Amino acid sequence: MIINAFDSRVRLTGNVGKNEFKRLPDEVTKKLPYLFDVANNTAGIRLSFYTDVTSFTIKATMGNITYYKHICAIVYKGFDVFINKELYGCEACEEGKDKLVYEVTLPSSKKINLVDIYFPLYGDVKDFEIEISDSANISSNEESRYEKPIVFYGSSITQGACASRNSLNYTNMLSMMLDTTIYNLGFSGKAKGEREMAEYIASLDMAALVLDYDHNAPSVEHLAITHEPFFKIVRMKQPNLPIILASRSDIDDNLIDSDKRRRIIMQTYVEALNEGDKNIYFVDGKEMFKDFNRDMCTVDNTHPNTLGFYRMATTFKKAILQSLEGKQ
Image (tube, rainbow, N blue to C red; front, top):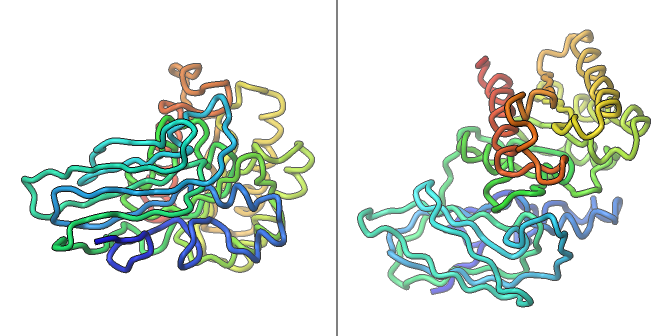
């Protein structure tokens, strides 16, 4: 039988709309049309289900792709598959093709297996289905540490540049570390702290928000005039929402500029504290890559590799646990 991604027997997270693989609703992209293409990238979208079969086949059709030389091809047209929270493997379309057929063999030792499929970080998925035995038992994985998703708003780093696999950007790592749903609103080069985006995010039903668009602010001045207003729009709508403000991780690329931006974000944080905000937190980008082997954390002195993303994930994990569970 054929199971599509929107079947009630499987759980698709990270997307908006009932039958679409996209991260923003039309009403937002109509207001901010330059986000249309990148909002169709499936970063953070994951399909989960339990099944008792020993094999199934993934069939997917991908959209048009604009490749960047510093980003691994598999995050454009590939899928990561985890079985019982351990990596099974990853597969991508052949070069020049847009259709993928991926055969997955599950362990026969377990009667029921948990399957997690991570969608492309930079690719568009047009069609997706699973071909599985007619006698298969399939049920949706509804388990999550937090009832509501954690929302991340940020730049290409948030979206996942330059992860070596779809599951290895820091937001997907966090999803695995915390066993919870994360909604990735990272828009490569196009997250600029717009009022319209703040109003949309403020309308979301979420457990926490991480605000990390420093990199996409075109200038220090732009960040200064947008950062606190963005925060206040969300805070006004959701007075008790845990909000985590983050500064950029790759401070070494331009120390003077990075320090000015960090001070702006710190100012938003300190002023919120002074106004009595009990649900505001700050993640210092200076601390993300740590002091040991900082030069091993990026591919181009800006975008993280696996080591860089792992260090970011562990830093954000601590902040999220503090904001949602009071853990230090």
